[in-house]
Image 1 (tube, rainbow, N blue to C red):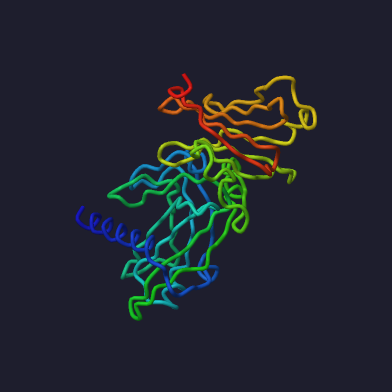
Image 2 (cartoon, rainbow, N blue to C red):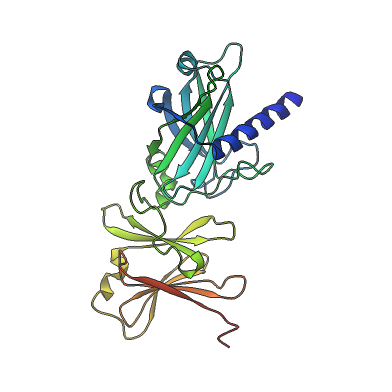
Length: 290
């Protein structure tokens, strides 16, 4: 039990260090990564958080060539961080290399959306793809800090349920296009469907800042109303939880209502099409509108 506790403390310290320190030396991770795969036990691609200290639900496996890594460097611990396309920290792993008879390879199991423990490992649910994987360590002899170039993967290629996440690219639009509107009760992302046509993914954001895909708005849904607005505002679709609704307005614009929230407020976003070129919002407060 004492050894297990010390291991937890060591990994927690390294996790905090790797999250807050800029590693100076870069290295090519492809020289040391043997395989990457994702397993999922009811986590729905990180939507459901993993229990504390239990490797379950959604796991990103990065198999590292420990033998070659130790030939090139003098390290005792290697850590792994995972970020999504919005630079949201979504997963981590740490591995202490045994002093005697270290394995040829090691499977670093990155817990996607790990729950908090001792104020560390508070990984969030992924909001977009692709994902970036980074390996970190410190050389025990030179004390130089090393961080790998990022390995970029599309998790949907490894796990079908990850296709629910919008693909927004690393160098493209990496923030919600409604940043600063509607108090971010929903987050709106430009995305593409299987045919490469523009779509919108609408995420319902909870109090912890984690998002759940609420609506996927395709060209087909709005096609009947392009240059042909309805006589009155019309509801087109509603999220499974009933909190997020898409309307087409008699002006031809599209509107998303989110709520009510804990204060009874309805958050409204209005935009002009897919992809939007003009977007604005406001809040309906039941107290001030009575």
